[in-house]
Length: 109
Image: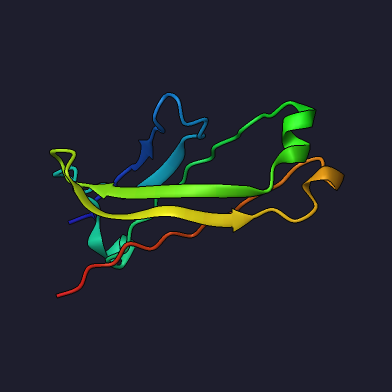
């Protein structure tokens, strides 16, 4: 019999207020689940967030302060990082600061 056509890529829309752009997710199987062979047991989520400050406020900026929470389906906090400071060097002489984060959430037994 002929090979079945490859499943279509599933568009993953961002939340409305995130400022993110849609990305393509892993191919979906007939049941709608992600194809495990394609993701190799790993998943990725891409989001872009942009903050715009007035020039005087931007020049005063000295650090990012991050709070990250992992929640379950009932909005209960599973784990969190609180008040992680990331210093900004020489903000007064800059036009823009790009902060790139790679956050890994792993399971353990």
